[in-house]
Image (cartoon, rainbow, N blue to C red; front, side, top):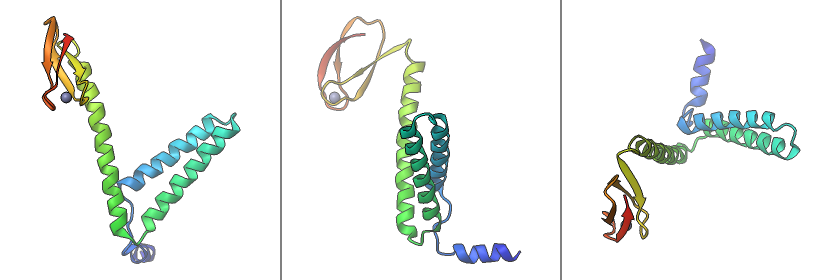
Amino acid sequence: MRFRENLARFMAGRNGYDAFSMFLLLAAFVMLLLGRIFYRSPFFSILFNLASWVALLYCIWRVFSRNTYKRQRENAWYYAKRQAVARWFRSWKDRWQQRKEYKFFRCPSCHALLRVPRGKGKIQLTCRKCGNRFERKS
Ligand SMILES: [Zn+2]
């Protein structure tokens, strides 16, 4: 396979395909679809098509980039964001599953999430994070 050897030589020292590039490719595809869905609106179809091209070109540029250090840092940044989003969804899933046994409150001063058992009437809450005290009906 001549082509494979040439490709391997060409890709040596380049970033290649990583998770962030995969996300960009997916985003480009979704944007392309949105452009098709909003084809009646010139503004949105142009906007989504443009965004799709930007994401696609950025993805291709990243794959062939020789600055692997910077690309790997971008990829790490992407992983951190993705984990934050996953955590957010998991916390909402947990809250939904526990909604019958527990009630959730936000601390008015630091916005930490507090969980208390339901049906205890009016109770005094102490925030675990900042020690702020406030009253709520559970
Ligand atoms: Zn607090």
